[in-house]
Length: 215
Image 1: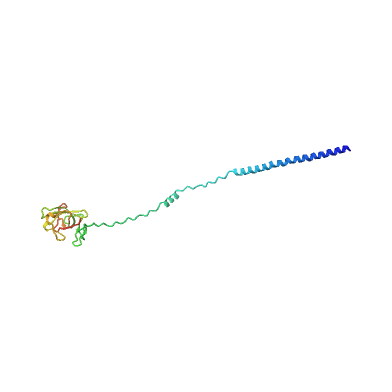
Image 2: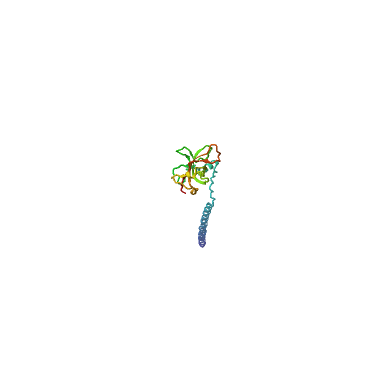
């Protein structure tokens, strides 16, 4: 009977030990679960880092087309402004300004009353013309055949032998005495170069008229 008691006691003790041992071994398993979770988190972080560290795709470079010569010329033509030809203003013929005092007397062209040329550029032997301008030089000796040098507004000069000073008047009918004659006075005369004369000979006139001009 006593042996049975000990056997039961031993059996219960073994069962108790077995129960205690099982629970003791089971607790570390719970502890071991935490490292597993940590490991899973680390793996997740590593996977995320790997995902972040994946090399980004470089953008593909689009090849730039070099402009051809034709397109470059077209661009230059478009950039260059078209220059419109400027119309040059037509210059109106400038008429020779008559010195004050000549009034309506023309200083070039053809005289409307006589049809003679006024202040011609060229004179030939036998020509008769009208000289009209300013007296720039004179030789009053002798007083019966004085010589005058008249310059037209164009610059052409005419040397002539005139009538005597006593027969010379202004256009208003007044007359100068010989000592009153001076340069700068206006004059008009019908002049003839003798047909037998040379170009260097002096022309002749018998109707020189003096004209007061304003300086």
